[in-house]
Image (tube, rainbow, N blue to C red; front, side):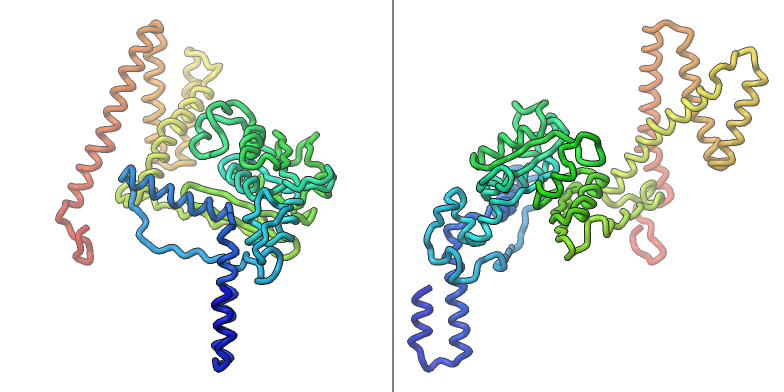
Length: 421
């Protein structure tokens, strides 16, 4: 960096433009050199995740590797040359995380360490937040109990086996424990000097909550949302607006993710906007011409709901309507069935009503046949009928429907434009 600057100074005949360029180049070199001793945990986490993903692709051979060049530029977080610790001296006060001071500066790091940060949720996103915060030295300048930095974590859930695959702070030995308690123990392994306060309380309009008016007024500076439902997000957003607290909201849905930063009195709040509704998939596409994975998933969900939710509900509704009616009261039974048929015709139409009547008849026939036999025979009868029903349904869905579609549209058929159908 000095040689670049000296060379610019010696060459007195250079134009002013070239001198400015050389000066800027020297400044950039100094910035880069100073960051070589730095450690910026969030960026390390992102790059580590990408590398780990590509390693799994190479080892398994199941997915397509990334073939592209990635440039990530965040020069705006660097200090201006000649300020704070750019002289190269190692900061003594922040010896736990000296690298961060080379990037952000002593003043910023000291302020960061004194902040009281409220992490709401200790699930997949919450674990990442706590890992990054602890590794960056958050809440390590505790000072007095009232004014010192602190991480405040709350999560009312306990750890289940399914959590271990995506929530990195938890292990098998943590099963059954509160997520917030286990997360505190794991975070302290990253930084033992991190001051953490844990709760297992729900956030919201609940009685006897530790997050009262005094907490919101003086006990927290920044809120980091790691929630899994909209209602809780809206409540936290309302509290942050009310008490003028900064909020960072994050969420994931499958492979998608979002982050929203809310600055008091400077940016819109979380509740100020809403995600656009998901596009509905046309029924004809689902039934006849699904061409995307999402179509087949939705088709399966609709089929399952129809077979095991709606069909069971309509059979139960029919049985409940006959409760209290004896077999001798044939007129009452006829009237009830007539009323039900009229209701179905009015609400669903003739075709749907006929399908519903057929389904209810089939389901109740099986129940009626099994009432007059003992338990072991009833079990065997239900098993036999269930297998027969499953085989017939599989043949209808995966053989007959395919044959019917191919009969209507052979492999060599053309559409209206003359292209292959």
